Image (cartoon, rainbow, N blue to C red; front, side):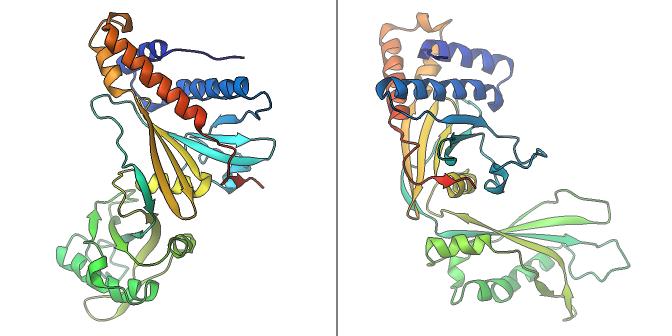
Length: 331
């Protein structure tokens, strides 16, 4: 089954999707066809080319199936995975975002290192439950500040020896989520820490089990709060709102194609270094097409420019060697 379509076909479909639904799931079949088209193209260039399988797994974790991939993809789930069935290997993944022409996907290009740990503290308060002692009133700024003041000694001192306080970001509290009843509410505290630790040490810490933390209450009695801590590795110097999500994908899949259907990035994680490359950007050409009744109504220069950028995209996707190390063996 050979797949072939042009930038005109693609833009026309994007316009229909945007007019009637406009969600990222609509892009899935077109991203699948685009990647399959590239696979057929590679096969036509190299007769012995080993074609890869593109699999939609965006609902993978929520399923009840006990698949091989579930042992590898444990946290954030990509939209597609790229599998080599001959070697039983995960060669990469695809993360797809909603197409928003007036707010195109932007990712800082270059080389980056994982240098930051994001600590997430989930604290549950039972302020209306008289059968429990109340260590803190989480609606009180004074009590929240009291918790924050203890963080360096109670947590970071044992986690990261000789940590300078200037490397700890200002804690950011977010409101309650997943409240179980009127008697219980939760607050989440997010703290970034920039460290001089090497990447692998940070990754090892993020893989370790959550810790139970004791906070000192107002009356100086040690009370065990209902508190859980998770650690997430991030790239502090990487200007990306989706950085943590992409880092998780890179840890699992090593290679990521990141796109909103108009902008395409290829991201790799090799020897502790994250490398971000921009393959192509169709945003301007799609916007020009949307200003007219159809693609054919664009000026000749606009059509030629759109086809040139499309050719750049096809060439860039063809140049990606998903077979090349690093890959993740599927046991």
